[in-house]
Image 1 (cartoon, helix red, strand yellow):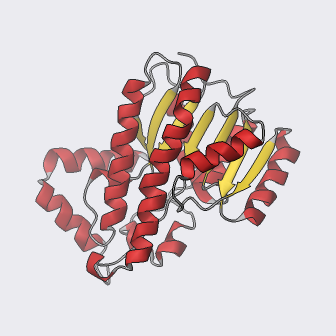
Image 2: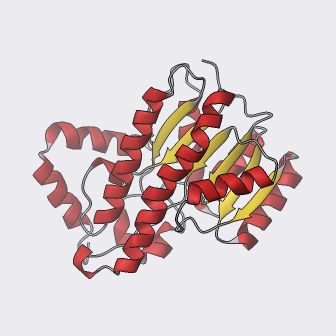
Length: 267
């Protein structure tokens, strides 16, 4: 395989109003891809779309949508079809976390988290993967997290959701081999986005240094450009080292206790 050519492609990006999603939009527009930007905040999407059209002369469509609804994948596919667009690449980036002891969490908020972080990723991947495989020249990127690699006390549901995303995406990587579609699970560590504003505390970062969205997206695009792209990639050299060491040098009990101490009150 050669590097991905995004010219003539249409890439759908969820969670595109800020952070990693908006950075994917900027970097893919710079590489020639037309875009479909999806998020709840239409004003943010409109502003970004205007910027990208002016700077890169690409076509950008905006879809304001709450992915916490049932059948989000089918609903999104129907809206794209009504616009007369043929999507060749998908970036499933939308997601959020709740922080705190699980037994104190708001059940409604937990159901919303499952809907966006788990159900929407599965639904959207299923709704578009056949046409992505038929096009045979694009990408499917599902954004997981470093949280996918071990249980996460005080973000228990988020870690479990991202473990689901990682497992699902790596399986789709194998199923899609030979089709021309490049499938990748992207696992960022703590990143400078609105994530911590939504969570409500920076303790969710575990005291680690925050990466830039630009570096995270460049890591993903570089992995997809490889001659033999991997099923998953961890953004950040130190994150990769930490994951390797945790798997090789520590027991599961030790890892869970360490994460628990990092996210504890006053950490």
